[in-house]
Length: 287
Image (tube, helix red, strand yellow):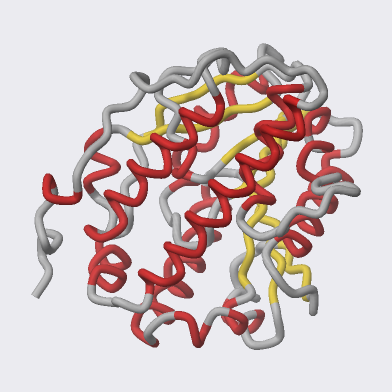
């Protein structure tokens, strides 16, 4: 039986054009285009929500483009997930999310999805190598470590994974587990921004889904890392995302605790906290 791997992403670049410098914006479009090309070469299907400004940049990629005027972060992503579920249907497959600028991730998707293909897990959280995290934009590295550290505290000791690289963001799941993402936030009053990718992982965990983590040899595109390191305007976007994700996970944990779920004591030793002073002030190649 064939196994279909569907990568869902969001190419609504018109909505974020004013949230970063033009250099960063244009480089993200270029990397998103390359991501789609890489996915096609490796036999994966890309489903991307897009807008009228962005669509012309991707019509030659072979991706399935869902033009929408849905705003925000959560609603367009759910549109992509729902389409992916219908695309796979009753066949054997996996659905995943990644940000558009992660151009080389498709090279690792087959390996990431193997536990799902083998039906041993319902959801896979990929994690970066130490070299992979060092390839990130320099101002983003402490943010990644802080987010992962706080997420590890919130999830408690019972989550059966060790590296817990939550802030890498990509996640892959079986069609059976798709409901945690397509039905979020349900009737709860959640912000429905970046939390729409993070809180469903907690919902899956608390609902008994089988979760695993898989190492990925992903490296941030050098051109993108250098552009973002020069772009101070990205700091506000990252701060907003950190606040949204951590605040929403705290709220979601309270929701599950009220229903009797025991997360165990806070896990303060899973990840070592790093100071921003441990990192260079500019990435290699920055001028």
